[in-house]
Length: 226
Image (cartoon, rainbow, N blue to C red; front, side, top):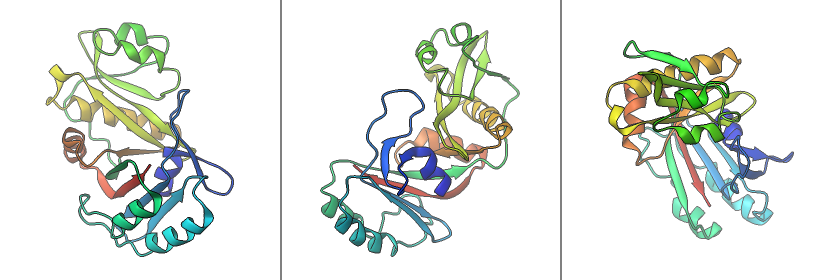
């Protein structure tokens, strides 16, 4: 969970959050509170740089009381308290997985997408990838008939871990291509000496199905208030 937090957000020297750690220019502000509850019982929490110190002290006491998570739909014990004290405007929550085994699924053509081949492989559905390909690396795709149909790339990059960003063209879903692309991406991240991580939102059922098909290791739940 420490690696997840470090990859997801930029931090200052005191450990306060500043921005969402998108690899391309134009990042949004980080949440006012990030809480990562783990299956082992320890929690990781971070606060944005502009949260007053007196609020941080109270929030830390509540964060320390959070229990281990078993089901990723379990809400934080002090969710209402966090929301009230921070005067929250938006909340996000979702399960976090580590990719410990590269389960490719079906035997398919998996290729790296680079600035050199992006326009050839990303046609007919992934054209937008050309604007981000230099930032979101590694980028791996399942290729059918010479074009990418499922793409997994690094969308949050920390010093020790990368977070996966996965997209599959609608007409190619349900064939195991997302799992194959994610497995290929995980191999590429390991080659860099980093840990491949996969997280999603509580209501993203298709992304959760990919995690289930791959047998990913559930290690906790992230919870953020903006």
